[in-house]
Amino acid sequence: MITQLQLRRDALTESRLVQLPDPELAVGEVLAAIDRFALTANNVSYALSGDTIGYWGYFPAPEPWGLTPVWGFADVVASRHPDLPVGERIYGFFPTASHVVLAPDTVGARGFVDAAPHRADLPAFYNHYQRTTGEPAAMQALEDQRCLLLPLLGTGYLLYDYLLDNAFFGAEQVLVGSASSKTAIGLLNMLARHPAPRPRVIGLTSPGNRAFVEGLGLCDQVVAYQDIDSLDGAIPSAFVDMAGDGAVISAIHKRFGPQLKLSCAVGATHWDQPRSTGKVDGAPSHDFIFIPAHIAKRDGDLGPGVIQRRTQVETLRMVEELKGRLALHHVSGPEAVRAALGDLIAGRTPPTVGLIASLG
Image (cartoon, rainbow, N blue to C red):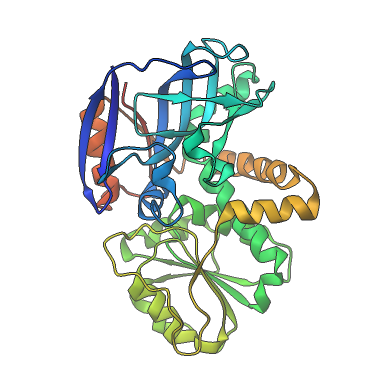
């Protein structure tokens, strides 16, 4: 039997557990048992962007329900593909489920692409899977960190590269929203390491997370959301938003107006707050950055795979630096995982906790 944890697309606080029979594999397909996956604010962003970007389409479920994509590890437990045997361990994009059927294509020593027809028109970045069975023991020992941190810290690095590629849009300071999030930590880490002269770095966060962000030592200043009006609105600034809270976005636009050189959304974690994407008080529109598009652009600039290799080097460094700052919390079993996802969506999971889940 396959267990799925489905979210109601139009009401994320509603979920259900569904039992499905074992599938019959077609020639070329494999069945993978999902061993572990991370639950982070990133998954809330996937759910909120499920229709606009297509995240609900990767692992279809009957409407109004959806399977939230997660990053994790799985083992091939049944195979009708000649080049991907039973026992192969893989890392990549999975549903909140105990098992998933994949259709591997272009299988190589390091990985493959899922060529399932329903994924053909979706962003290809998420269709790549890594084969990890033959990796060095040191890499295999970092599975929890890879689930939890590599996709998020990697996104943070790519945001830094986006700013760098655009000369910081002429900004003298960078405002990073939801600064306690792991994606923001990746961006803050890279900004803090940028050689002088560098833009001033300001982390925006809730009062409850302010001490955590200050303790990271990556910001020149940490400001609570309600204190945005204390910032000097005359300084040319770039705003990178991880939360999607319309009130915060509007406050930034009102404070900086035409001095806001960039206003962009990376994710949306404050699902219960009104959205704001319009132009306000002379400021630029608040636009969404689609990271796979930036990767494709940089592949053209630097050559295929260069930006991905740079990202991996920096994210592995950051993983080492964050050891001891995040407490890994493992949850297993359908009801426990359902409760943990509910807490995450409701904002009850502190930034110091990293959730590793298994439905099996």
